[in-house]
Length: 287
Image (cartoon, rainbow, N blue to C red):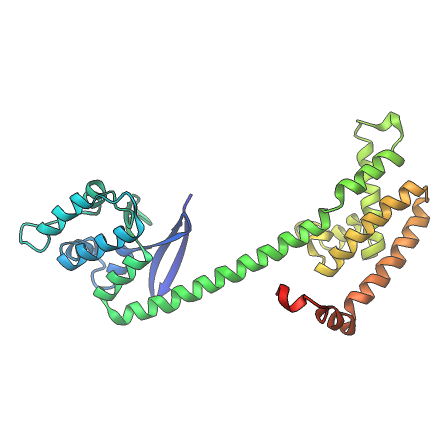
């Protein structure tokens, strides 16, 4: 499914569709700059030009391996004559073009073009408007890149939190759950208690206490943890699994895990330690 966004350029809203990692601008919205009541007539006038057909054909040759060159030559030969007219639908049907497409719908419908083609059309409409469009489009792509980076960091946090989940839950299953509880709903209570033991060791509160203190927040306490906390959490899960196998009681494990959490968080919060890590051999090359 195509992803849709809106560019606002000099008080004009322009729909942008992303399909197969390619951006398509609404020529209909751009044409409203000069004819708000009948933008389709502006697009049609542009399509009648011989220069436009040659430009569209060249773009398709460069980007479309199934472009029909024979049909293109016939269309090009007729372009520019008084009798010549061309719709987007006819153009794509005859030549198999992919740079232009139409979208049905009262709201958001119209003619769309690959960004390369759309910028050429925009220049024909208004060179000044084209410059503002380019600037705003660049801002949009930078914003999307930042959002992608934040999403990647979020996924990294979630991955760190889950990386040793199997090791941890297997240890609980093997060493804490009596055989008669296996396969029953009661074993979930045991798993939850181990999760809260880790929460207490690292955050100082249980998941329930956090929810009660943050009634308007979605998710859970770990969703709001810093990356450093989630890194320590991975280590605590490993240690807790080991302590369970060694037969330590919950109170003993909580005390030991809390000591480790405090120590590791102090290390990760120390600027001198971070500086030393950044100076490790290969660090600069990895970046």
